[in-house]
Amino acid sequence: MTRTDPVILDHYNRCIVQRIIDKYDMEPLEAARMFLTSQTHAMLEDPECAMWEFSERAIFDMWEVEQITGDPRKSVYIRCE
Image: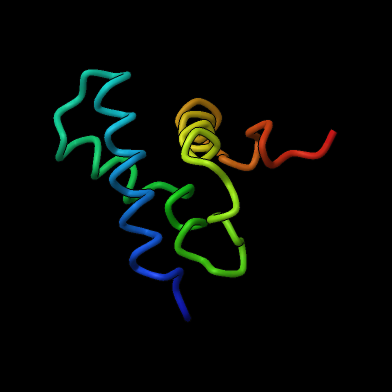
């Protein structure tokens, strides 16, 4: 399986983990673990999902929706209504 460019992944990883730390007052390692093991991150790694087209805010929203519902696809940035 090919993966999204590591430079792109690094950018999103840093931005999203920092948002998690800031919003939830979480330790950096715990925030990183939560994001890196999420379905949202798996989608970000998959180049077929083209997640790099979304802003950091959108990716963070997908991660939060995943934490609440268990499915990042329920984010307003993905679902079709």
